Length: 121
Image 1 (cartoon, rainbow, N blue to C red):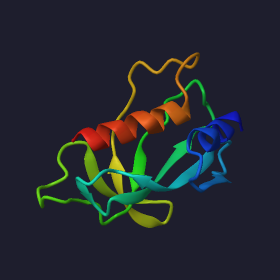
Image 2 (image 1 turned 30 degrees about the vertical axis):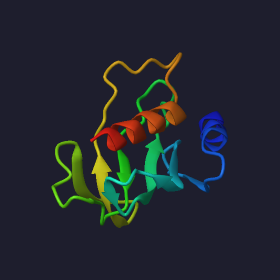
Image 3 (image 1 turned 60 degrees about the vertical axis):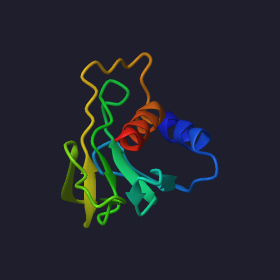
């Protein structure tokens, strides 16, 4: 899948695990991404599904370590929730792209945007 190759190329130095999701897409987990000093833990895996309709469909939502918390003790706020993903507890980040454009938007770009949004909170 070209999307996984692009993720590997965009996140050099990070382990990228990808597995068939059984529905024509893939479950992807990128390890040890820096969320910034604003979070504990500072580094998290980030997982998501690249659906069978990709690139015609958004890559949404994204999942992080279940124990994610803000370093200052305040709540994570809107856009975050706790769910079960891939057989384990996870923190879900909801950042839907309502204007997803299959001609220019990619799974790697979406992960970069999600990380930028997290770091900006």
